Image (cartoon, rainbow, N blue to C red; front, side, top):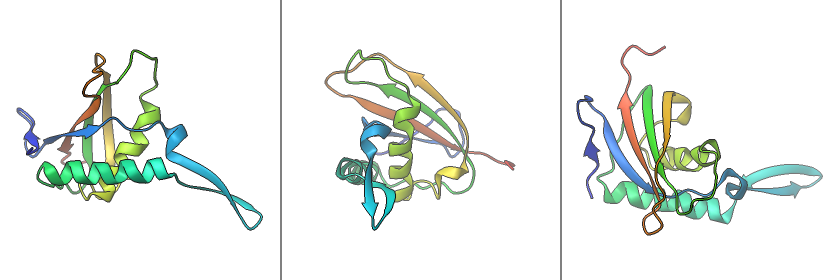
Length: 134
């Protein structure tokens, strides 16, 4: 599947990714020596790898510099959720896959909760370069 150029947006691409794990399942707490630390959980690593595979199957788009992101969340259930709890996982995956240089370059974002899709839960992300961003 090739990334879809976003309509009317120069240089923008739309990528579809699998439904991400919540931030609560993305990190794992451990103790190193006497110090607590947060590491990427096995579930987090698996999701990051699935993002890389999805991006590769969609043509491996890459956008440098500041970007604007629009996310459409299609959850697997009707359960209430906070979209902020899912952003970190997919954004780290996009950086790992080389789609964006770093998630600090996301200067603007817009998240939309969409109807549930039990058979195909996903996040559809449109990434658009921003000209003249600070």
